[in-house]
Length: 457
Image (cartoon, rainbow, N blue to C red; front, side, top):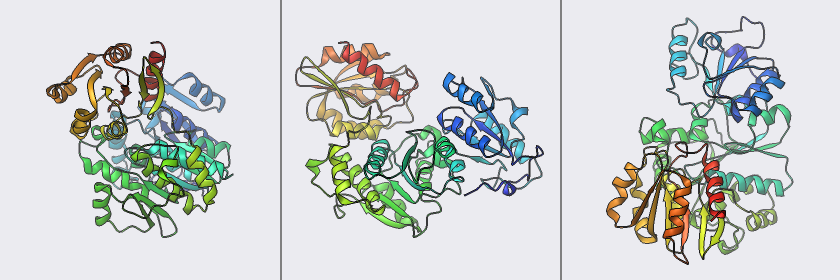
């Protein structure tokens, strides 16, 4: 596919090149998008309100791309023909609102959203214009990274020329610019799906939908549901939509929608697609049986040999920070589930616990409803450790449970508190239910610090 700049609402750029693109945010996705845009002949400017880290500054400089950080200079970005937005920037960010108001005042045509005249897209949308590779796309509230990594592993084991992109792996745009893959396995968040319009997944997988990121969706769950279902946008009968048929939210939406894709439901009430017994799966737990089913169907759709699928399901090692064993100290197992950034993900972790549990939770609340884990907390936990700058909501919800509760505002104290509270045969589980950005750079940073603190005991 190729870019058609003439379709943009304000026509050819006055700069006499294919157009002027502004990239908002210079992390992995933004930097990759800027490099691809420069290679395709666009004039490019990158603007980041935060600090651009040294590796990304170096990449931009090496490719002759102008950038700024610590601010958004409106005069430098207001006249772009198209904007590529980092998924971390909310749609109601001040710079987006300012640009939307400015573009709406211009006499040119409508924008991507049909209203504001602001052509705002995601890196994935932009990158897909320049590749004919097959796109295998995975979304859901939980299990995305595990399922994406498993499918990528299966395709690699099958000898296919495949890239890993989206929320994990390298920027899709950077891979399109510098590599030439036949397949891409892409983990997509709702934030990335928000600004995708012409993109089409050859294989779309929707694992589940539970409340998450409601602070980004006006605390309206349906807005979040609608974002997730954008993964089926533009699909035809030649494309596959794989979905968990037993998820109540997905089931409800499927009854409302008429989709063009070929449907592949999976679940415990559906025909079992697994080519081996559940006890043979490398990934343990009920939720991972479902993830393995979705990956198996995707591999079948792509005509991967059954022997390759079977061996891959046996040998896949899982992903970091998701129910990751760290160490056993004084007879107590420590598990790093830092990737559990919402309540439903913590539910799956608790459901997999087979011993009395000390649960470490807390962080940046995203509009969480903790009642989903109430029964499992009462059944499996004897101690809760709250780890955040603001633990008031956790206290309000859990104090009445009659459990041992330890209040901390740092990871060292949380691990030390768990060490003191745990008894031989217990499990200490870091499964925070919350985002990491109150105390940590990312969930990976939180997990790495947890593992380091455990190993220092």
